[in-house]
Image (cartoon, rainbow, N blue to C red; front, side, top):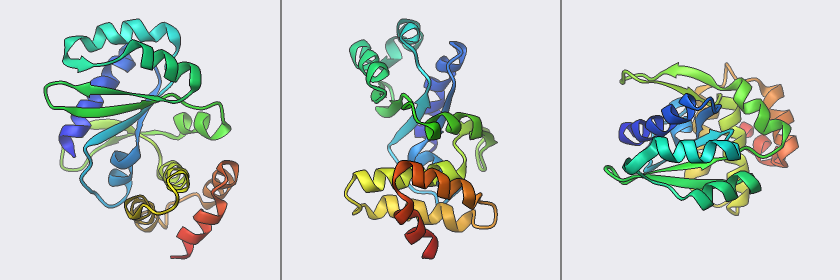
Length: 187
């Protein structure tokens, strides 16, 4: 997990130098907030704008595979593109936030955390947001990924006494996954 994390943070450092808001999400975030598991890619949510693309590409340099057209498309479509760190072959998926209240709130709720077992500090989405994001991916994937469901349950169990259930429920309703949240909370 730490090689993946280091690759993601190297890309994130370049985003930060450009003044781009970012945080880590996906399986890295669910492993940090929940039950750790192996993952071979990292997800970064980054508030990239068209004017950031060329400076970001220059900053990544020869150490990364990155496609300018894919970046521009992701910004226009509010979707994602990937980066590959050539030395380690680690993949970093960069997601441009959609124009939903939930996505904007994720940046405000993300937290800078010092990670146990490593001398690394990283900006991570909050536990509630990773649960909601994973529920959305679980639904989009046909609700059959045991790995996604396990990640969701792990975060809920390990943070049960700290979770903002009102935030969970309102975000789940906004993203159309309220039924899945209630199912997960009942386990």
